[in-house]
Amino acid sequence: MAIVSERQHQINEYYRQVMDGHAYIRETFEVLLDMLGERIRRHDGPPRILELGCHAGVSTEWFLERWPDVQITIQDDHDDMIDMARERLAGKHVTYHVGPVESLPHQFDIVVSIARHHHLPHDYLGGVRKVMAPSGVYLL
Image 1 (tube, one colour):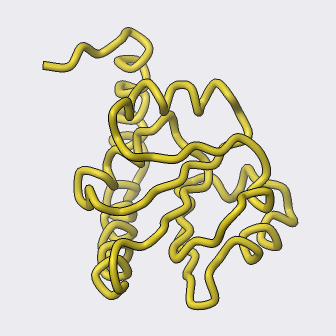
Image 2: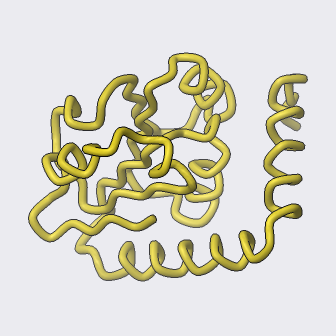
């Protein structure tokens, strides 16, 4: 049985309240997961997925529960958020990147943004375009 730190407990409670407190957010998230699953199934081999903003690893954990073989990179501008994700996802095969999306060294088949895009700089889509594979898709 995994021991959950007080910080992780607070994060879990926050996301539970978010999911329970916003109209249709759970349904919207389920649609996003369905679309992501369809893209993963259509891809030849495990796709490389970039998650913009790490949400302390909460959404990444949801992805890995469904698709444990995908290659996920989490990008965030904040060290503290990445640190929380590392704690939550200890032992999972996840790559972490602190800094602008355009500074990532390789391309991704799927880019995912969950409630993060409106916090990013207005020109962030240029960076997303630079790191997307030619047949890549951006789901938000």
